[in-house]
Image (cartoon, rainbow over all chains, first blue to last red; front, side):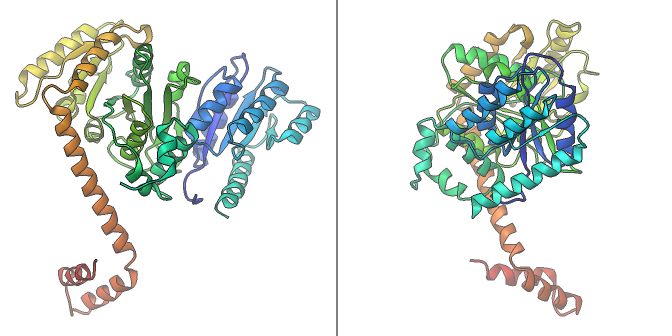
Length: 140
Length: 306
């Protein structure tokens, strides 16, 4: 697949809380970075997130979590991605995640976790680099 | 027709393979043409849903999908949202209104960005509808971007075009001067629980009274998609249309096929021209030197085209 095609990113808000301000700001920033952003809205379960990601054939899943359920949600999403043979999809996230948990999640296979105050350009830059790597690997 | 293992996988309901094929259709990449030649081309009813931003198109699609699922029909949805002309990015938000269908194996939703295409649709949407048809989805719904007056491409891509309107969206006859109202096969006044819905329906009927009767008169229906009101009646109208007693759908399919051949020819010619940079530069030099004309050079280049 040529790198010229827009990067597709699914932005989901997991957990039962209604704090979707951050997810919306990030979705708008990704749009402005030239990505095609599939926004799925509030209260998405890991199953819903992965099902939508498969249908949309996205390059990246970005999950926003503020409910404290990150140690449940991220591992389950990774597991479902592997089960559905969609391990090439890059997983990242943002929210309030303690450094110790973040380290553990990265070790499991979460690509990156962005805490509060991360410049939006850092997020989109990271995604562009990661997707470039994955797409290059595919065509090789 | 050709053979391609993916065609069988799509027919058997492999959602991963279908999703990747949709991406190729969208990008016009890979060997999508081979796959399109190998899949089963059925006669899924292609229902176009169009209308101004905010009239409730996505909510109506979701309510229709619920009704179709109750009849155990598999529903494919192509939801188009605009790409930014400045950055190329897009916010594809139609899934938010259709979230109840996430996780249902009988529903496949794909969000598409316009990527600079005019007409309110996305590149590859015709091919994408073919792929969903081959996956056993019937109906296949194509939801356009929020449109104004001139985005009529949906009438070609769909068998049946539903124009959705809502009360209070300005002067009701404004958006239908020419174009959309003429083009629609079904008119839906959504948000019928709001003031002015009946008045809008009456105004639409009056507008239809005034037009030339060379085409079937589209029915005007009232719906409240958020409360699932009027949806069964709309389903009935669409089913009646799908039965195609008057042959209108068959005619529409022939027109669509003709338009697609024409578009494919233009694409090939475009490709040919792009690949002739050196010849074009030489021709330009001759024309600039007064030795030739554009028409003569085009004729020579066409002679070369095999």
